[in-house]
Amino acid sequence: MPFSDAQEATEIKEIGGSPAQEEYMKNIINEFSLTTEHLCKIRTRFMKEMDKGLEKEGCTVAMIPSYVEGRLTGHERGQFLALDLGGTNLRVVLVTLEGEGKFKTVSTKARVSDALKNGPMRNLCDYIAECIDTFLTEQGLEDKESELPLGYTFSFPVLQTKINRGTLSQWTKGFACTGAIGKDPVMLLQDALLRKHLPVKVSALVNDTVGTLLSNAYNKPNTLAGLILGTGANGAYIEKISNIKKWKDGPTKSPEMIINMEFGAFDNERQALPLTRFDNKLDRESINPHSQIFEKMISGMYLGEIVRNVLVDMIDRELLFSPKGTFNPNVWSKEISTMWAFETSFMSKIEEDDTENLSQTKEVLDTSLNLSNVSVVECRIVKKVSELVGKRAARLAATAIAGIVSHCGIPDEGVDIGIDGSLFEFYPSFKTRMYEALQELFPEHSDIRTKIRLGLAKDGSGVGAALTACVATKAEGTKVV
Image (tube, rainbow, N blue to C red; front, side, top):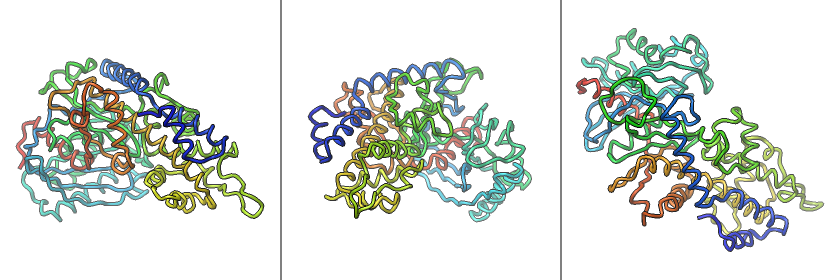
């Protein structure tokens, strides 16, 4: 719950700061705390934006059809490959589905050099095919008679036109291969696999949120949505085809399809989200100002920077890390003035610190930011600011889930939500804070944990991609051995 006046007064007194520090912290607590009423307003707008995106193209929340139809039963069996390309490493995974929600995986990683990232696309695809060839040989599958279906997690902006077709619109993440923009990455890779005579068919082009949903759904058939809450933030959920008003690709085999929401852009118009001057500063100085506003408030790439903006503001007002006297130099450091220097992982360590004199917080500030001679009061302030930013992120993330669940409805048996990402997995109390917000948003349910079950869904880009290939193969009516 947000702070009451009594709680707020207690929290401020426990910091033990000067009157000026107390007054500043009171304002900060008010700015970053979200009431239940405000969460409800955000959910209402989120649902309206979902409806808009389902109705027409070009909306803020894009609501992209994934072409992944139907639901998993958990009884799917067979061997599938997954390929994950999107950064420094390329990963190849062999997933053996055993039924009853069980599976086995074996994988390999290979580095993608700068020369490959910036050279001809043909060279990159040939390298990928080579890695797959080596992997299949290691697994004794090089002479397999039937083709192995492959799910391709291609983490770049793609306009998808079928479950295994799409067009690359632009490169990101340091890639700039020639001969790829405007082309289908599936066909380019399939050509390379054919050149090496490999028994592999690229069956699905996969978004990582869709993969996260499917990896959770394999052993939890009541899975409604999959979210990424890590460096970035996004979600996917199962929608009725009848609700996808913009669907123009004819009849489908199933009445349902997974939608890749791209909800990081929610409220770019700034109508509902509680943006502070610290959020505005971050947005203004980012590489993509005025976009991905929601993502900038809830994902790991940005939370540490919001905290740093607050701390720097306090430094400028001489409320933090100020001179301590003639023989004790100013503890202020150059690092704290550097954008992105305060990482979200620092917030995790600081929030975990339950030592009496906050020695763990002191160590983080000293070793990572070169801030020495920090007082216990200053450590308490840093911890409180981290807590406020982290808690707000969890409550906002929960509001997105509430929007999805309210849009779809909660069946008697409840729903499962699969979540991947370091923020959800490792950040202290993140899951607990999400549940607290969900309980406020669904007061009609006495124990929301039984109705909306949040669970860690690992490896959407691996297991999830393989499962997407399984769905595609099933839709084709191809038998998998």
